[in-house]
Length: 165
Image (tube, rainbow, N blue to C red; front, side, top):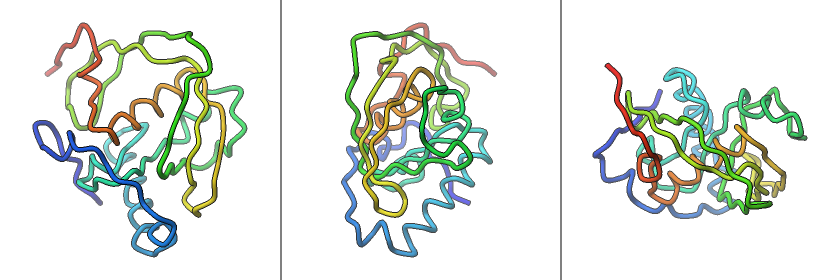
């Protein structure tokens, strides 16, 4: 089990570095991926980026429930998605605003505008190149997690931010 760091921890604001194939294929990396998945579910998350567990590398996990909500998704919906060195591009200018929260910003929520459709390129947990389209909530989760890799938190983009007890 990994510890999820929270604001104001400075690691959350650092830009993460890319990792190479030797690291991706190492037992250390595979254990990190598995531990991140366990941590994400323990804390009721739908995604988790490596900086949130004090690792400033370009790795994030997208929970399989996010994949299942994209009816156009062609990936395996029965597995959590490990994205390594991910990049995304908007497909069009369509956006929508929805409520977001974050494990690293506990009990805080706000409305964030995100692109509705994106193309994603990354390596999977085996170091293989993958390309896919993500839509709606699935796209939102990816954009949120990739922001973490760039040292950006949802509260930097959110409006109507509020806290709950």
